[in-house]
Length: 260
Image (tube, rainbow, N blue to C red):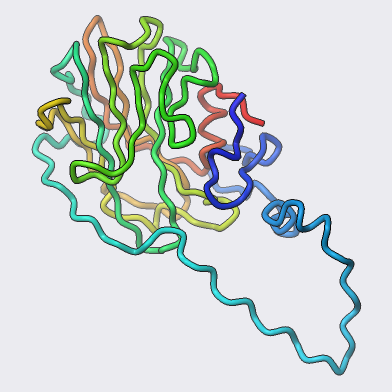
């Protein structure tokens, strides 16, 4: 079972009970009057009871605007040499060895803290176990074939895939982009731009295939960017580009990762 506190870099993560119902439209995971309880955690329980506000008291000063979660620093998008359109599947061109999947983006709203993750799936499109989900809080798969790393080689984040070490039960690796606290903070993909995924040789850093997101919607809070999948003994790349109104915890539920 995944400890969801590792999914959230700022405040406690959503629980299974807080997952939004229905993946086709936005539905906040928490009621407005419950969000403060979730975000304050123990401080809510320890806080003294509020006293009634007297008529002569001045209204409290407004709270300062929250500080940006992610620095507003644009990163130049690298030249994508073998760009595919959404749904345009193609052979990866590598059936052995390793590849590096590089991810990039820029934000329109500094509150958007972007994360990328990988789900290693069996033929039924479910993970074999909770530890077959790779992200910054769990940076390596059990077989050591998929590893997460930070910024490098012109990309904001990278996930390395060694196909020679991949467990034979794994037939698909799905790459997901999410916004931290998207549901509670009402953040969405309309606040993001320049998102892409490129698959590179490793070593060598030669681009094999890539995908650039061209449409950004306000009713999307996470997106499946692309996937590597095995078809008739050949590894292929599918630029999915499918957006959903769920967060990282919701994506875990889709692929069978149990969360606390």
